[in-house]
Figure 1 (cartoon, one colour):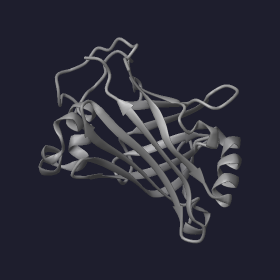
Figure 2 (figure 1 turned 90 degrees about the vertical axis):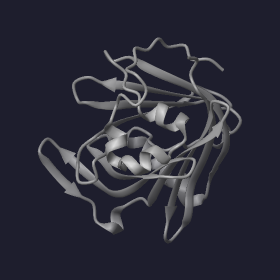
Figure 3 (figure 1 turned 45 degrees about the vertical axis):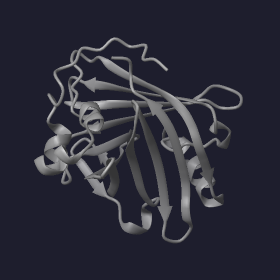
Figure 4 (figure 1 turned 60 degrees about the vertical axis):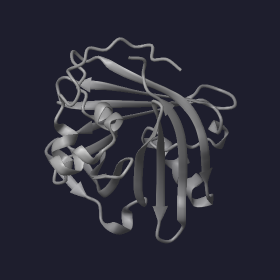
Length: 215
């Protein structure tokens, strides 16, 4: 699969944002392909596109209700089981004004338009990185190095309007979100999203297999 976008990039490891979050020792233990993907800074608002395939898509009853309700605030969770074995596309665009990144994920469905999920990653806040899904809703993340990639784990959720910010109490949180990026070699990586509740178990699980962009 090929990347259709043109990008302007700095040299490998030119972007220190993820590197600084992890620390030098953890960063250099990562596979070279992971350092290349997360050590790249796109200039001039350019985008990089990854194409792939959804290989796991499941939700339990509570997860399905939550995913459908979340559509009221932009649909940040995959909500259609028919996306299994359908094409997936992820694009990352540099946020010039905000010094962050815009992430757009597109998942094919058995019928109708693909589901498109928009979010913004900003390198700020108490953990050093936050993800915004719109409607004033955000999530602080903790980034950890794995033997074969990275994990992003939710630390807390919050509501924000201008300078006003409210950290949601534990009983209002939808669950613990974990996103992993695991390098598989041969220019491939596995993206996994898992949302778990202490009461209802694993609410949503999605795995998608992606290929690197053409270099």
